[in-house]
Amino acid sequence: MSEGDAAAQLSADEIIDVVDEQDRVVGQVRRAEAYARGLRHRAAFVLVRDGAGRIFVHRRTAHKLVFPSLHDVFVGGVLGAGESYDEAALREAEEELGVSGLPRPEPLFRFLYEDGPHAWWSAVYQVRCDLPVSPQPSEVDWYGFLTEEELARRLTEWEWVPDGLEAYRRLLAWSAGQA
Image 1: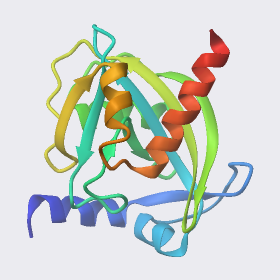
Image 2: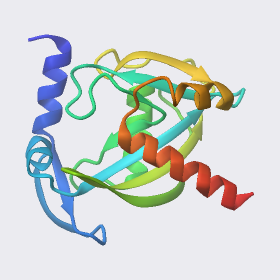
Image 3: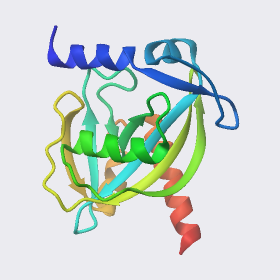
Image 4: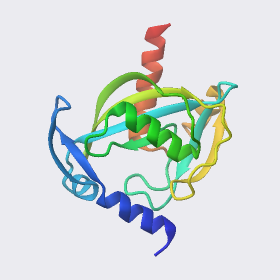
């Protein structure tokens, strides 16, 4: 079994919380079961900027359980059972970026992502990372830091994870409302 396949199996076996329409925990299942049955759960999305303000963008590996080989504007992932959004945002950002000592990501807003069989409460964060990144090969096939202008161009050229695209669209609207 390859490293990517082993990571995917561990991810599939992880126990996660199942939540209702109001984001209240109503049970726990293996992640693979939540995906197979379309059960609503929780995820954290972290927009990462470097010291120059560029945005970390990456392409997911082909071994990911959901949206393999697509590009993403966010690092993050599914919350483990009993884990808070804040804990997951920091854990996932450090894991995916391959860093430790990252500042605590700043919470921005939450929304319910629903698209066919996929449904999860999504907490959106942002963080500045001045550390040298070394993304996990089991999670990330390619990465780069893009300016907002470069990212805007790539949004029409590359294939993107739909939940991340929705979160980014909402982040742009949220940011415009904050100005």
